[in-house]
Image (cartoon, rainbow, N blue to C red):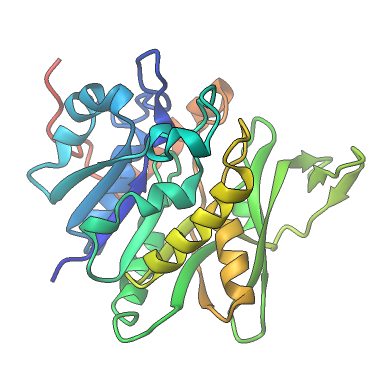
Length: 303
């Protein structure tokens, strides 16, 4: 049975060549994405769908995806500004259309419940196992999805502010809403973010947070197409407007969609700045020492 994982990677590069967020953190140059794919395969995912840009397609396939080809079925789909006809957008637009549009690009590859992650987050094994297990129960449902969430204290960077999806969850563990808060960081040891008046607002360290790890069924694509068309009609001519998964999900919840939430005990790792690298390397080495990861994950790409 195929269980697919869509990896949102189109923003990892740019038109001028080169891939971002591919700094080696493992003993053999492994990246955060390498560890995520390894964990996903170990959890049971056997089809990986990368949403990338054609601007760095060759580079991505040569340096990244070739490492996984003997472990899972690897597919590529493409997110481009030009996916929206020019009469509906500004010809000066260069920014991609957002994460929900990226998911839509993988529609033809999907016929069973599937997971979605960001390429640049280190979710860790426990999270992928929880996502995989919950996907096995979504097949007979319609407009019922799931989201893996973390506690805020486990997903803050040591080096500065980050954007986090602050969640409101019901007593029945269903998602009520998710709101992106920007520049979330520890101030005096407490998680805080600046509001629109630049006033620091404190958040509880146990606040549930979305890191864009979702479980959906194929029926979601009909809703995505409908809502994305509405978005383009309203904002397609704007240079910077984008349509995110949280924004889409909030609208769907208002229409009666149910999103089950599942807590992951894992701690996030990421390279927000160069200062984070040494901390990530130390944690990876500790996980290797404990036997969570082998010293070498995959065959290395040809140089």
